[in-house]
Length: 77
Image 1: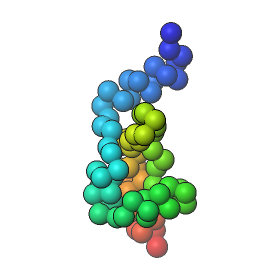
Image 2: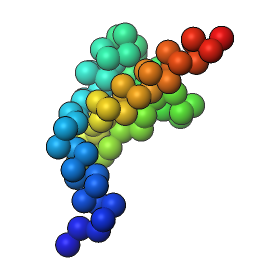
Image 3: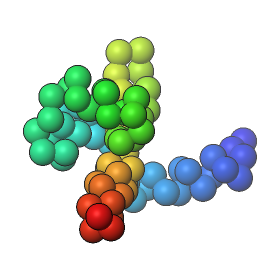
Image 4: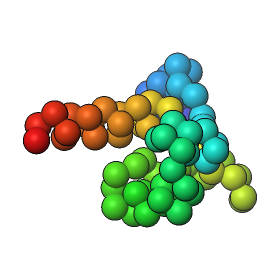
């Protein structure tokens, strides 16, 4: 049985897309993987979701939110 939080997350995922590292790199302008991971450590980019022992994916909505926050910071300067 799913908890209320899990049900909300499941409902939200129905309208989201999982991106692999290649797609995330392209989404953020072709950055190197090491730059993406440094940005994750610095909280600039969203952390991946482990979907398997050797597989991670990112939610498109979280990548879009991170990019929107970068744009908002730029506009505030």
